[in-house]
Image (cartoon, rainbow, N blue to C red):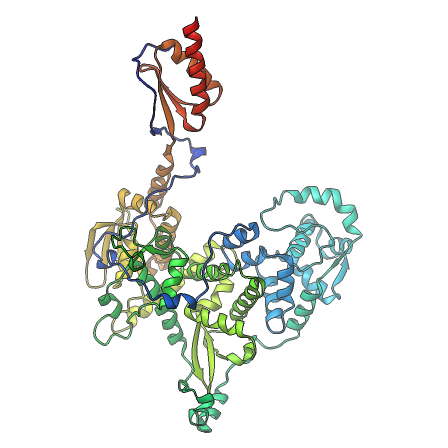
Length: 634
């Protein structure tokens, strides 16, 4: 029962107010409202405020355009894939089977990679290999009863279902489902269809069966013929580039020796550093380094700059006052800040994913995607330091050569001229992308792998006479101080995303920051999550902490960052319509009606004010007019 005191009589008005209340623990996952974007990070680094000019419009055609959000549900699912094999899971069955049917070595390599991936369970993998050896067909009842241990028979149908969903088994069992379907239906399917399934045959698709047979019969460890040292020596003995000069009237670059592993790593690091430095707007001194510095960072190509804009990492400066918007400089977006805190494999996959999404509205999208995905999977079977001539891609396969050049822009391939012909050398990023980015669930393994890479980079930097700019080692202390061993302003700007820039202190090879509540909340407003901040500090933790078994992040710092993250969801914004009632009787009647219709947001008894949800205020206004008319007649 409500008791409403009398209040003042004023006109009703529409306002937008903030209703604040404490959200219980079970409501902490409520979706937060959009926060304003910040263009640049304040702090000691001059790179924070520098803006980049626009590239020439002619370069926009170098890479495919990234379309707007597709309306096709299939394309939407593909555009949200977090890994390479999750992307393969969401492809249509006909596309998967067409990839298995590609000519060697692409088809067999794709089939073997899918079978090795975490998309397939261990039981499903064993069943597939046995079916290949048994001719490709076997009774389901014999598979369940004869091949599988009695303690694992409950998962037999799940294994067959996974094989059918990945295009490995013919869709005759009726178990296939695409990702996103509830797995709890397994129990029901096993109970209802067990009797019918036991008499059916589990048949491998001819595309997968033939490709796997060819793969198992191949003794080569690499998908393509490797450029041997003997070929290079024979080419030099026969005169080298002198005899091949002048072909087709074109002057080509001279041949060179194969790049070393260290040169490939430096090339990949330079490619990604140029992108990251462009995002944070590093100045020319930080890019070029000192006089004679071999580790200078070049500006990204115009095609790459346009690509960064199309995928949402940069945007035109919204505060540009000029009349010609085409001359507006580029500034980093909240998505770009989030991109900077990701590990290298996640960054590379984001580029590859956007490259694949660029062909969503192309009539030849299936063939282009098959070409790019099969080429990427074949790169995962290569070794770093081994080269391959472009002739292995086919003389008339222009799409494969286009994909090769695009991957070269992303730092996945090193293109050069070796032994008189153009050759490509896969980098460590391309080789590791297939193995380390199989599934988002392998988070711990990925963190350890990235930590090992960061440790090796630090050790190499300490052994060098002049420390490089690529290493970063963090020590997070219990007093929320962050000690970073680095010389790069890129790392300083990255740490400035979630650290208090006013606490910045610097020595020749070490910087000091403090983590505060305001700095963490500022990072949250940019779109950075607490998990990304903690992951960044874990990946770049100092190797001495790992060697001595010390916690990489103190427990109090980790817990406090998570608590600050929860504070975002304790405030919920709601648009309401405020009604000032004339007297207590109106307040009681209207309040009761609004409460019954679930339109009441809040009521102030001492002021006779009602706060009505804006989406339902029309019906409440109608009730108020009817109630007042009724009171006047009575």
